[in-house]
Amino acid sequence: MTLPHSRELTVLEVPVAAAWYAKVFDARVEELSDDCAQISRGDGVPLKLRRGTPNPHPSTPVLEIVVDDLHSWLEPALADGATRMTPIALPDYAQFRDPFGYVWAFSERIAPTSRT
Image (cartoon, rainbow, N blue to C red; front, side, top):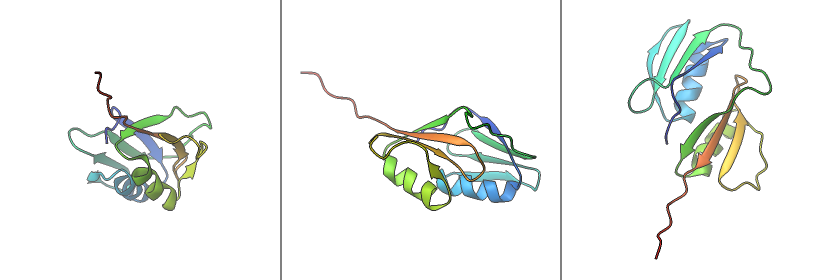
């Protein structure tokens, strides 16, 4: 899984959101308080949360994450309250809205083909 560049999201309940993102994105909560959190996966701190009134617009820019197996990442997100936004017919790509109103996308990494 490759996370995007560092993002900051505003959420009502930082501890609840931090637990959700850490679980769904298989990440670690590096710092946590009622007002802010930092969540990382690998090097750096790709996701920062701060307490406030979220105002994600329905056309919120998609935060895209490249994964090796789309279904193994998407199913836990959906089981934990996310809503799929793209048709199931798209086998290697899925957009979903998380329980906090933000839009994400999982894009399955396509193995390179060999040329002969």
